[in-house]
Image (cartoon, rainbow, N blue to C red; front, side, top):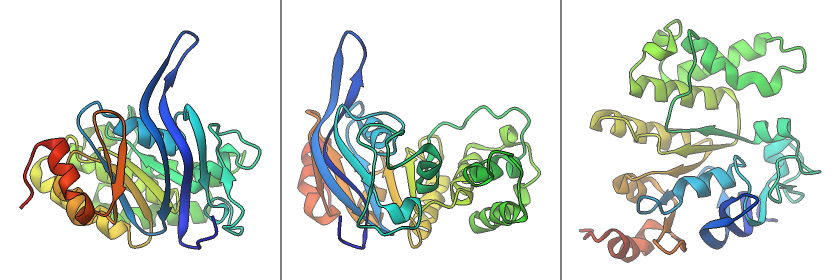
Length: 263
């Protein structure tokens, strides 16, 4: 991992699920590297394993095999050539949970249950990796929360109860929370799944703007987004194989897998 632009790398990961009785493999052996300030988009048919792959790389679930590396300067500010290794576990010797929370943030398609929390309170949750064991917010934590509100342009929602918002507004709040977490890498799982067309277009442009200063990995069914905004495209076929490359190079793969014609 010597390339200074590489922020994330994996060697021979296989995704899936296992319990005491069985193992279910979802995607096959795959190695990759992701460059800083880029958008990597994962697409594929329903049930192909997009979310499983994203959750594995982001550390929510463990890979069946293989190793995932986050650059140390992403985690702790130390040189990138000495990477944090997940090796299938969050509690590895080189990367504890707090360092991991500072390395990446995750925005899921479904909003969490939040009770009567306000928008400001939801966004401020992104600061928890930084507040220490006392759980006391500092002036800097408030500044970062306000900054995230402003960056997404939702200051007017600050005092609203989160659960009263529209789906589009909720998704903006969750993105702002990820920004408040101040990570170099943000994972999005189907962020436009429940949005109408104007909101989807707005969200696409917002994610593209964020990628100027952040590294984005995203799953989506939106092929237009994949073709127009991705630096790198990963396509999962029905056999669990992952085809990686630029959108221009993978047009034929898209046509074959989705049975469409790209003009």
